[in-house]
Image 1 (cartoon, helix red, strand yellow):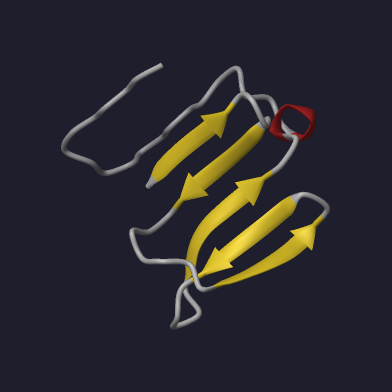
Image 2 (spheres, helix red, strand yellow):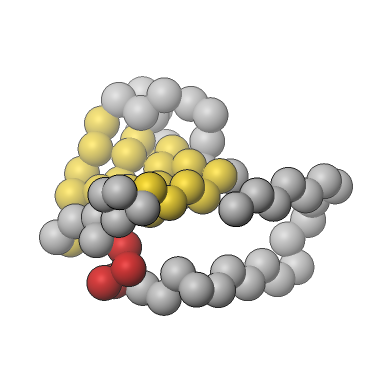
Length: 72
């Protein structure tokens, strides 16, 4: 999973899979869910992210992973 924030557009994208998105549905104003060819969720796009959520902190709890990459 990758979480990317684009400051110039105030957009947050949560990439849940490396599979290609083939369909998107806007489930609320400025929130789009992306699906792969099999209907599996692959990403979440949030426009005007700083108006919808607090991006000043990210807390991960009990996430099983072997490596960690953090960049600002």
